Structures are given as structure tokens and as C-alpha cells.
Length: 256
Image: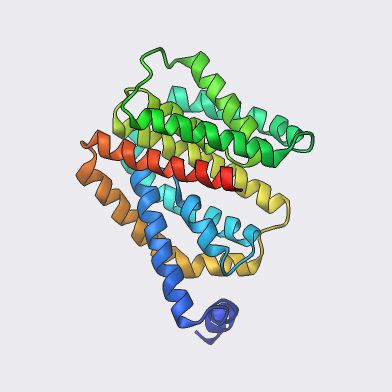
């Protein structure tokens, strides 16, 4: 026991009791939203964690928390995942992320982020008005959205909005949309984690912080999943929550 205490001591002494309670509560809230909507933990938690950690440490922590807790959700959504569409979209995204990184060093990244932010806000407002895309959502459209997500992710780190807007713009059932979000962002999380490890950004203190906050994140994930099960027939509520979260992303991007 003393050995475990000695190992955990650097993290337990890194924050005082009030800070640790605040981080625990924030972690539960972020996990609830992410389990309910299928995305968005980083939107809330990275800025919160960055109050106490460096931005890279905050990103590492959210990435670590998302990995095992996605496995907590997957069994319930497995049969709702549109595998053909998700596979094509994510393969194209992975293939085009390096091109986005290439663009990153050749264009004004801040200006590009602001332009994307404006587009995200405009499209979110349009969808909140009740508009839906009635055209086909087949392989060609999946590949185009995957390409857009990969390019934007590599160039700005904002690859999520194209995927979210694409699925929310259609008429697919809420359970399928959420399942598509969960598996798509799990794929992105795995790729991100591999990149962080390769870059040498994952260290023992990151793993210890993860171990301290994982119980709170797991509880939030359970609560968010239960909330979705109780409200999954309320399609308008789900879409409103998801689109409002996207608008926040857009506002943050424009103000960046």
C-alpha cells in the first residue's frame, strides 16, 4: 500500500482538495455530455484541465480518459453503428490528415480556423431552424466528408464538426447518429493517442492523473448513457444539444 501511495503522491499533492473536487465534478459533467451526445468531452474538459495543466497535458489526459470509457459504451451501440458509412469516412479521414498537416505549415492556420468557425456557426444555425438535407448520403458523400474532416483536422485540429454536421443534417435515427459519432471519434482518439505517444508527450504523471480521474469519468459515462436511453426517442432534444455544442466550437474558433 505504501508503494502505491508513493507512486500516486506526485499527483495527489499536485492539486489541493478543492481543486481535486472541482476537477472531479468537471470530469463527471464532461463525461455525461460525451456519453449522451457521442462527442464533445474535449470541448468542455480541455479548457478546464488547462487551468491546472499545460494544453498538451490536458489533451493527453482527455485522450487517455476517452479510450477505455468508449469501450464502456460500445456494447450498447454496436448494433446501431452504420459500419459501411463509418468505415469509408474514417479511412478517408486518416488518409487526408497528413495533407492537412502539410497545409498547416503553408497557410495561415488562425485565419483558416476562423473561417471554419464561421461556417460551423452558420450551418448549426441552419440545422437548428429545422432544415434537413434530403439528398443522398452514400459512399461518395461519405468519402467527401471524410476527406474534409481529415484535411481540417490536420490543418486546424477541428476535424469533428464536418462529421457531426454531416450526420445531423440527414434524417437518420438518433441512435444511429450517436453510434456513428462514438465509433468515429474513437477511431480519431486512437490515432491521436498513437501520435501523442510517438511524439513523446505521454509520461508517467499523465497516466497517474488519468488513474485518479478515471472513476469520475466512468461514472459520468454511465450517467450519460442512462440519460440517452431515457430520452433517445426525443430526436429534437438530441439534435438541439449537439448543435448548440457545435455552435460553441464555432464561437471559440472565431474568437481564437
